[in-house]
Length: 332
Length: 279
Image 1 (cartoon, rainbow over the protein chains, first blue to last red):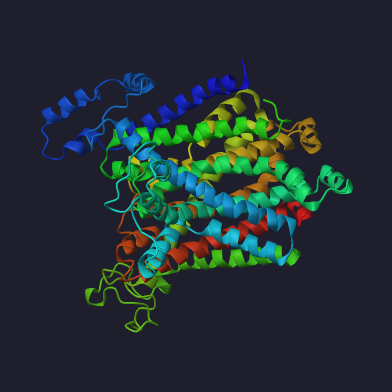
Image 2 (cartoon, each protein chain N blue to C red):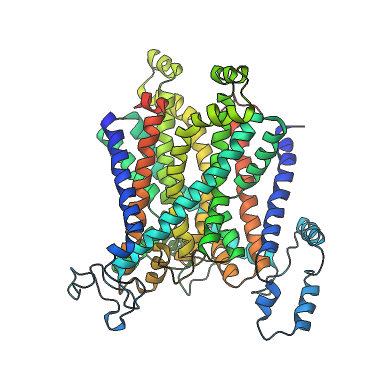
């Protein structure tokens, strides 16, 4: 069995465990979802009928088995609030969240990696201390507050950027991938591209800021660690230019830790998107999750949380597999 | 740069101490009752602004409640949730991690599988999920945050115990007839305290931000209890008219978390000899 299939088989019990935990959580929660949804006016007969329709009168394990067997075929039922298939709602909103997460990742990498690497190369200098202080501030900033402050200054006071949504009202975007930046480029709709870009900027900076702070610190310590290795001294002794030593010997080896942290932080990006999307009324799955929780739409909530968890798990798995590509010394 | 390490600990510790004093002495320090509404003074700006009133140093909110008093009282929830979560998550995580690392075999496998499931969730998501199903409340919030944080303690303590149990002083303690429970509690666990202190400090900062995030989303403590997160959420609707409603609670969260992170950074630098060499 090769590495990929071994890891995928190993992932099955964990994913089943995750789904069971979420399922159990929903059932130990106080309050009957049927009573909550039907309201005080519902008769006991109405409640009983709905419970039967939803299969809530069956034993817990039978309900879990029903849920799991339907989930395998991609059938997660219908949302109670929107009265539409859950997967349709998720498919509509997922591209927005992916676009936001990817943009945040780009913001974080573009700021953090050069800052971290430069701080390490010039370590103990004024710039190093300044860089690390900025990183410490970044880690301590609650990103929802940063988002609100950006809305106030850049959106409200300076009127530079739009404060909500994905694109200006009235601009039509032909959906191909659901990722507006890509769709507008593919269709040559540059007005749409500019509008989508402006709408994405503040949420991406908000979500990417704490990740940038963490990655800056990790990049710095990772580069410092590699700089002390014998092969770096050897590379310098061979007479290689400093540029070559940094790019070919230091960065390549420091990359593994940076990629690990980026991978681990993708989960934080996904869950952080719940808050950022709420602050910017950004129509992604994070915003959908909060709407489903407020409406007590337990079916949608359950699937969204499961989806977040499974995505996080799969991303971590992919990062593990990426290791051996980055560093051929690593074999699973 | 040894002084810088101690400076971080002193400054961070001082900020944490101020937070503790604010939380404990809130009834004495607050100029007013945080719940008392004076509608004729609603949305009054801070004292130094043109329309500010000397009676309200940081202004008032949309119901005429004193912002300073609410921020002082808000520190109670942050402190309570932060400390209770870190203590409970620490106890659970350290106990499971120590047992798993020390005894190994099946115990280790079971604990590792359980932690793997918990690690499969981003911790904020676990907290959101639990709060969504259990509902608002301080107890539920602490439970939700504890369940999302214990695994960090467990992982680190397990790793440390795995290495400590092979050391000579542990073998000597066992050779002298020490029982497993005694050796674990008396000789192994005390050697993990340095790491536990560092994780607990950083953990507290994360817990305080998460509590504020959950309160901001309306999933934290009930709305009648003043918290920094819920104040931010309420103030958001008045961002252009009364920015102080969001600026001050946000600053309170930032300064607190910054102080705790600074303390954690300083402690890590002191305890970690590898980092000391790196500097």
